[in-house]
Image (cartoon, rainbow, N blue to C red):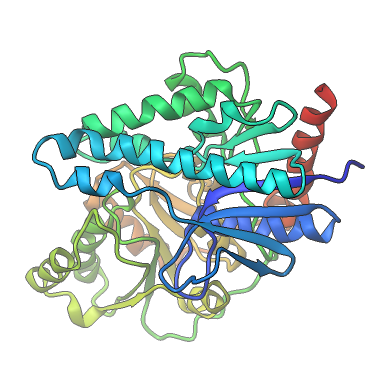
Length: 394
């Protein structure tokens, strides 16, 4: 076994008030790597309350960075801001990540750096002995491609240019799902020979019998209140479901997102007259999600694209059926008619019909083996194998 110093340039690390899929992945895998005797450093964007440059989470050394802010000033300029602010941010993030990696490497030499799409452009300038991995979690370019009207803004296209350069210069690419790996291969026109598919880890993989104590059906949505996550389609679907199931209640868990303002969401709720049937809970800590899943009759996932879906795996753990658009990586997890129902993307009428059917659905999970591939132990072992293979190539 090779003991390594690994750096995750994730730009995110979750706390009690926030944490997306990238941060959740890094936190879970980093702690397991520490448990196995490796040294782990994480580079994350400084949060408002963070006063120090460093902190430690159960042995994981977190380096908080503040990238340059030229992109913010550029964003205020008419026309120019819409075109160049995002690409400039990409360069500023890449520069900040590069400097942080050099600093960490100087203190204790690094073996592996794993980054995400954003901020990896500077990897090519790292010390030759450092092996680089880019984890393809999913980025704005892909989500814009699949979210109606499907137009990719110019600034996103330019920013993606730098990301593609990083992809082609990395020692290894990994993706959390087969569908997403194929999507990136298509985008790169086969220039990358292979992308290793390693699912994201789920902290606790077990079959938990969901005991819904509610007399009325409860439909659960978990995710950012984001356009690409289908939040507006969800709201449009609610009155259609209520027509079929008058007693239905809805729980929405997730933070606000700049793609859809809370004012827009509240106006739509008022127009559709669904406020009394809907609870907006905001961000909920992962450890508190179990009780919410246990209340759910079904989970609704109207995303236009998913590179991976923690929600799908978690719902299966609680034997809760998932009703989703037939989009992205959900096709790798949901077996239509067995553990959920898939409908055509954007068809809210079909989504409502499927939700009504899901009330009487019993999830078929034949064995825990179906979930084991998402276990922390399995994912960590596959990740370590990728790292060791890179180091042995030197």
